[in-house]
Length: 58
Image (cartoon, rainbow, N blue to C red; front, side):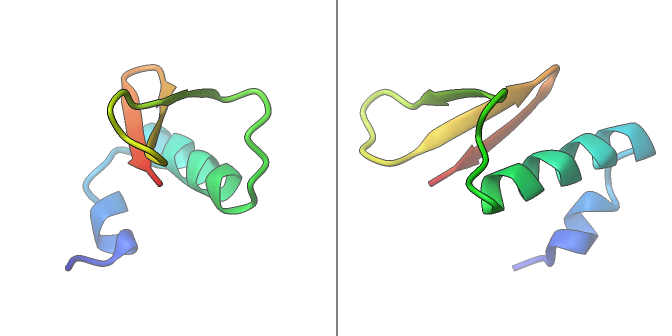
């Protein structure tokens, strides 16, 4: 499985900054101000949307 740094290196600088910000917010459980929705049909799977970037997490 690829490391997070390797995956982030595939994005441009602006997208990488947004992704790093969102990942920090997810990890710190400080979800205020984020566009989070629970995915239909799943118990504990959510998605965050920021522009054209989507992150799926549980």
